[in-house]
Length: 160
Image (cartoon, rainbow, N blue to C red):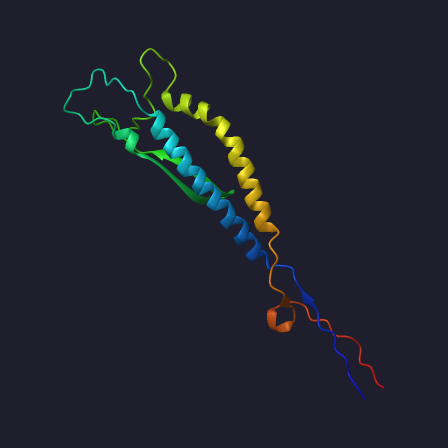
């Protein structure tokens, strides 16, 4: 008399593993793009006249304050580029928010961000490629059964 059991093996990744791989790939691309954007901001954030500002006040403070970070959000992960420089006159509001070139009505951060839009297309392509590459990485084979929390499949008893 022999008894045969059926053992099921699957290569489907656990959802948290696939999610982690995809997020890790996306974070890497987002961090790289954040560094590129910060460098671009710093390169463009030059040539200020400082009219009306006393010589004793420091120069280029806001240029040094550009930062990027990748943070979790309710929509997944986000790339934030920030500048926390405060108004030099002691007011506690954003300096970058109000800066504009002499004779211009548009704030400089709006002008620069508009010029950076072309960089976004390359970022989207690299992000998509990273997510797809991470999503299709082969995973280790796993045994699914009662010990791993999955369903167990047992065949009928065969008597010979």
